Length: 209
Image (cartoon, rainbow, N blue to C red; front, side, top):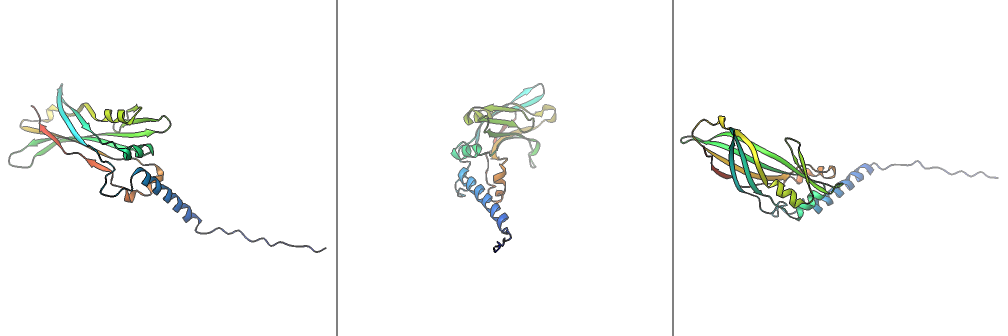
């Protein structure tokens, strides 16, 4: 009887396998970016729509100046798709009080920003607004309800009256929206997607004293 032998060939692993795996992940992320609109031409903004401060005024409450404002933020299919794919958007309101000086540049007395974030929670299927400073959260059934909440600023304390020392002052308010946190699958491509940011024009009036 003749014994037969089978030669076992050593298993080789291609040195290109890790590279191929990384490439496939990057391609998947790129496809997702295109899906949510990051790959749009430069002439078409992902944040198209109205962005403006519609009205604003201040109250004086026991020596504290409080800002009230109504803002219009954009909403379009690209923004909605981005939120549903895990992108967080930041909605900011900036308030600045300047002292008007006749023979020199105006002096900025205070410049503060209200930072709030909007995200979609897939498990609860609700849109969550988070105050970045306090950590307080509110959730809403629809993105329209969440934006309606974000568009209203009520009794926001911005200055103590004792910080003003006579003269004439102006108060300016503007709104902005920008991309915040991204899911891990999109972070590798940030170097060519950093264009999701818009600011409104300033809304300025004289501070009543």
